[in-house]
Length: 122
Image (cartoon, rainbow, N blue to C red; front, side, top):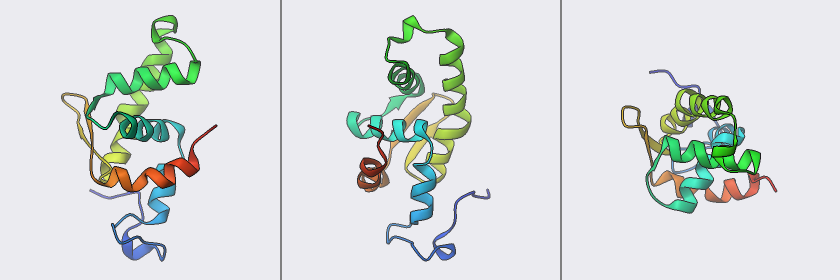
């Protein structure tokens, strides 16, 4: 499987854990991925894709998910399932069981914490 991320040899800013700064910044470049990482760090446990979707949609719209249009929730679920969670899994930040729709943090997640705090939206 090819990767969209630079390899350790491709980047002069590689870290000893195997994640280059280019990979880290690419992962943090999208708000949904930042939200997933933040939620996984805060919860410190495995979460379902539905849990992640609900939290992200509620944060974005500052309201309960039950108050929102189903289309907004559906679009977020699709982007998480097909784009954002697979990118995090490819970088070994999470493991993703697509059949059960479960996202589990790996040890590399903690290494992202300092970068995430710098990239957090206020």
